[in-house]
Amino acid sequence: MAARAPDSPGGIPGHRHHSQNTGNQQPDIRKAHEPRKPRIDIYKLPLDDPDTYELLQRGDAKGVFQLESDGIRELLGSLHAKGWRLGVATGKSDRGLTGCLVKHGIFDLFVTLQTADRHPSKPDPSMLVTAMQDAGSEPRDTVMIGDTAFDMAMARAAGCRAIGVAWGYHAPAELLEAGAEAVAQTTAELEDLIDG
Image (cartoon, rainbow, N blue to C red; front, side):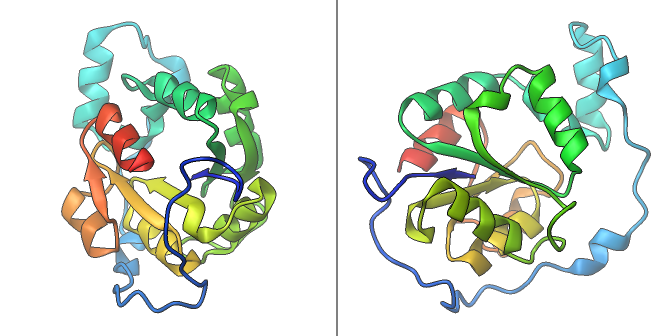
């Protein structure tokens, strides 16, 4: 999640109310209950080895190593420097999220961390609404970036912009069907879409 405070320059024009009907269909929640392949623990893999990335990219662990993807740290730093207030709304636990952000040295970039420990599962907008409150932002000034149809549906339910990323769990077509205004193929494209 990236949000601009109401007094920040470059806010996103237009106003949407929380209760606005976007006309988008909810994602197929049956997919959440389908069996998944075992997750790969990236902390035990040699991340400096190119073969590791190739294996991860072919497997079902794409989203697990997103902070190791090209340009993610730089993108977060750039958004932070531009005045975006960054937050996380994730199905992960507090402990797992905090450990990951600390390990990657980016914990201090975020003003809010919302997890499944304190909120209903996505696409319920609770964690995103709380993140906006913590960031002092309105839905019209907030962008939810995600890799699942549930992220996109959550953003729409909260009245925010929704931008998908092509390097995650769900295919770009699924993200668009769930309400993404666009799906970024690269971090450079993602930054352009956020600043849009």
